[in-house]
Image 1 (cartoon, helix red, strand yellow):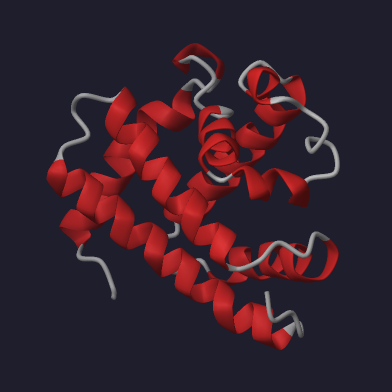
Image 2 (cartoon, rainbow, N blue to C red):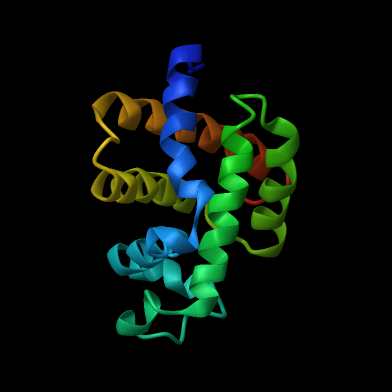
Length: 155
């Protein structure tokens, strides 16, 4: 599942505009979260801070934007490791398995949502970039399964 150097170049080039100016990109940081909650409302229940929000409140929520920015920042850190992300992924796996109890399947959902949102938002995020990004996110997602097993969460 390893990515080639050319694929990593596509991934990081596509990620640049997302990460470089979160506020200036129309709440890019909150869009994946609000889309996830809209398309998969059951996931909202996993977030105590958000579960009382109505659908109309999701996109404008400061808390969701802050969470989205955290997700985007952490994901950027992982992507920049070009597959050598195990050390950075471990504390995320531990906190999401032990503390937050987020089902593993939700990571795949957010990965798919991120690619969809990027496709809709960035006209230069073409098929090759989409495929490379999906592959990179799948690689990161694949690393979460063993961590969840290690930390005793079957989610």
